[in-house]
Length: 362
Image (cartoon, rainbow, N blue to C red; front, side):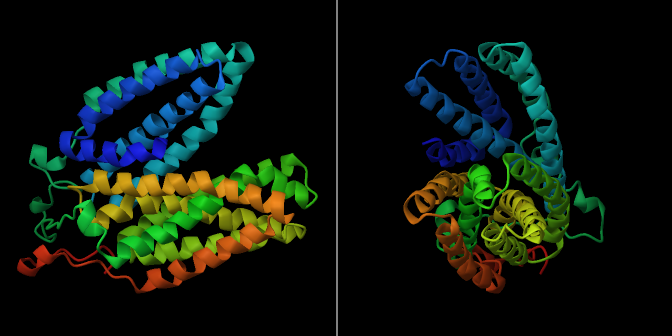
């Protein structure tokens, strides 16, 4: 349900700008956090989850990543990977901090504290520091490139969501990206059970996932550099190949070597996905409608994230193990993994009268 709102939020970002939409979203998010302190039954619990998923992890993330994409072009992948690395490090610190709050306060008070903290820190940052587009200030992405005679000015062709949906690359890339969050969320939410079925205690699952997140942070920087210098299909190919490796490793975790292979390959999956989604769609289809396009893509990916764990549960309950769903993931990942290598930057009909800027990496 929360995912269905993201395309709408994306359109509002395109129309009104990141700053104004961001302010409204943060205010609503603060209200949602404060309201969580009053959750007392399954219905309010459901609405609470919908609110924080739609406003926080969904819309607020869309505001911040589209703002970065608007201000960078040639360095877009690098800057996005740096921001995602900082985000990963913040997550590593954030969870223990909240856990300490929970050990000294009741959970009602913790939600109120989170709401007040968001209002005092995030809201002023967006209201005072956020800027929508560099062109509003006489600049271009990556700085004022016109001052450097060696660099050509940006000639950008912009696609609407409807136009981008008529290109093969849109659906092949989206098909490849759907598999990773679907299978990945299943692996994460069932990781204790998967490891237990192979004879491991929960601590091993937690340590293995922690190692995967560290690997993901390192690879996100590498992928950010690669996106700026190579074809985006290569990044998706690496992610899907790593996903296939993770799925096979998860089916054979009895072998200690498979534990290391699983952490390595799953870390690559985690590191590639976020950099790809926050960069490639804007590189392909321009910045003018990136909120709407990214919002639609996010809706599909979040839906896959929600359905993946259900498939894992059905596989375990009705087929007796996780192996069938793991092999299903391999089958689903293989076609887009191969096809993405043959995809070129789409040519918009308006480019017939332009000399378009080459795709990054071409």
